[in-house]
Image 1 (tube, helix red, strand yellow):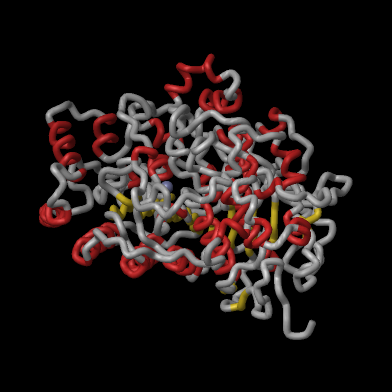
Image 2 (cartoon, helix red, strand yellow):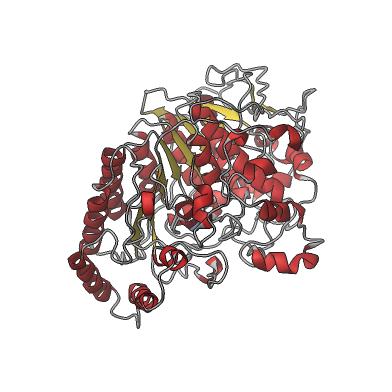
Length: 636
Ligand SMILES: [Zn+2]
């Protein structure tokens, strides 16, 4: 039929799915485990791993996969997770299940597992997949196997050394950064989630080998940390950067702070690698977030970071309006490989999620931007002044640790107070005033390390009031996603089995699935459980083919590279740590890529064994004076 090229939804497909806008041919490794979408927190919980499957489906149906090296990482194991987390905490995560959780009430309290961070089926495996992708992405970057690594299942920035927090249990970001530090002198962490990146900041608060930069809502919000004056301590002083924001920041305002701050970071800190957490809860209309970024405003941060041409690990994070997170992460995947995707969504098995517009876009709303130009300028100047104090080469000298007003002069401090008052006329006591009051009270107490750490934003795992992320929801959120939720609280099948049926058949599904109009009848059903015309083709190794649908301009067969399914005994993984950052010491395979039919030039043969992060040295837990969380993560 000349001139017509309609997809199953009846949309004219004569326009190309994407346009190449950046021809620098970066090698982009993309980590995706098709099991991920089968995990579900508990019914009604806003964190839905299914969103990653939605994003992946868009990446595939836009044919953007042609530019990616797709990997399925070996899930992180206990000995890898305990490079940051405590043995007891990880053991608990491994053994607790919905069936036995009642016998672990004490541990649930201790490790903050329960409300925000519920026990669910497959919890530990879920953490393993999330962390495995990030660690392996870091390992590939280390060995210059790629320029950019993407793991949308990562970015779980709230998890602490021995505590779950804000829907995060295992901190894949800290683990990935520890892996990067084996080869890179300085690692930059950037966090554009609406929430403060507290877990990562805390882990590296006393080192200059990692600079953490977080842009987040601050004031009456979760997790309550991330004030401008929290800048790190000791050797880490000035290597933690916080940009506190109010509600409603829009694209223009965000770029006017993000770009100059990141430029200054690059100039003064000169990182050798970047980790970018792309939490999607900073998008307009998010169920929990209160910012007003459009998809393009959010992606602008990704584009901007990419432009520095540094080895970059790109991670997911928050994001609670699934269809918007999926669109944004898919679009950002496209930008990372250098293509601009068409605004009309291609038909895909989750097409119903994207009505009524079926477009690749998340628009800003008309909500008020509570961040005045003056406020943003003041903070920006203060942040950049602090950055100027960082030397490009980490210093090894000890630095004094003043009690108050770190990084800002008294004058700036007063101005901040004035601004704070101006911006919060209707608030009885602002967060800033409250924290000053608390901090003044502290001054009457003996100053010991613990107080010091707390005054500077390092909080003890125990003995503080925990905020709940769910206490801060967006009253103006756009409508919920159709509660298609991947939603059963308990997966019907073991994820590994279910995945074979559910996810990897996606392209066959799109071939056989009814047009959208007909599919409307089932909007509340689990999409991946819809018509399953035929099982996925599975080869002898258990790999699942992901074939192009016939309607699509026939490309060819693509296979995900599967991790070697042979379990490596735990004991085999406890090798002696790498003595030096430069030593390629790991000898445990993370991925044994079996890329046995790689027709697309973009899908490279990766049969070479990967080394793992298992060899990263674990810091002894000697320093226990209230800073143990910090000290333990400090790289060697
Ligand atoms: Zn968040």
